[in-house]
Amino acid sequence: MYKRSKIAIIGAGMVGSATAFSLLQSGVALELLLIDKNKDRAEGEAMDLSHGVPLAYLVNVRSGGYEDLPGADIVIITAGAAQNEGETRLDLVHKNTAIMKDIVPQIVAQVPDSILIVVTNPVDVLTYAALQISEFPDSRVMGSGTVLDTSRLRHALSLQAEIDTRNIHAYVLGEHGDTEFVAWSRAHVAGTPLDEYFEDDLEKPLTREIKEELARQVRDAAYDVIEKKGATYYAVALALNRICRAILRGERSILTVSTSVQGIYGVEDVCLSIPCVVGRGGIERKIPFHLDDEEVKNWQKSASAMAEFTQNLRLD
Image (cartoon, rainbow, N blue to C red; front, side, top):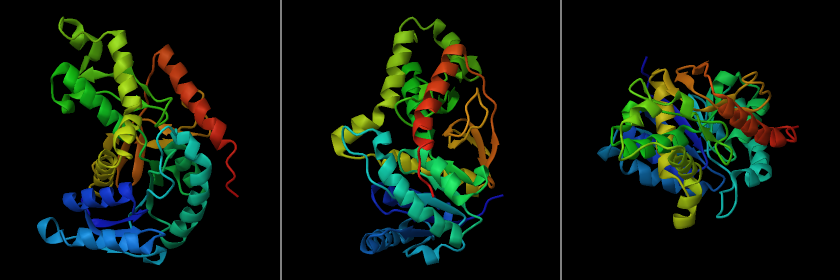
């Protein structure tokens, strides 16, 4: 099931170069290709990374153009305008949709059988745009979604519970952004519902107020990091590494990637994050999930926020 393959990254900025560094360290791919409109930037990043190959894994790291895409199993799109301080992800939609309209047809022309991973924000809207432009099956187009948000949540809960993050099963669903929400009703620790796990812990009870604060911290984490250092890139690079490993190794891991969610709780024609089985075929299955009444409202609110933009996208 495991195949060391070729991964192309479109956009050699902070996120793209950090992703390439993470992939090089993991050795999951045999070849890494960096493409950027600033060819010198892409070449410089590729050179810097390739100098570390003897200290990591035997990976062919190089820069190039779209004509070098053939053979790529995965194409990661990070190119786009950056999110500035005080700017929401949705403020970026018009600028980055135009960029997507330029990039995706060139990918399709070169690697029509590849798997696309969209990272550029607003990721759910642009995943929808990439799906429509490429005309790929929705199994082969995904956004990085709330994989990182879910990681942030599990980290926060592990500190609260003082246990290993790997024993915490909780998911952030919906938009990767301001309307995302935690599916608290489905969260558990080693099979024990989260509320039950905390019932006997008098020192650290998981009250509604604490849940709301944890969800706020997860939702606003990117804004906090941007305020302090200008951009987020390390953690999202690790999230992308995780997605690529699941695909190339055929792990069939459950990850909250952004995908088309037709018919789920009445939602149509948008992309949002839900638990999906990710493996060699891309999204191999969308996991059925059940929400309580309040969470259903949050889900539909998130979908409505995305629909405002997807319904007005000019993709022709």
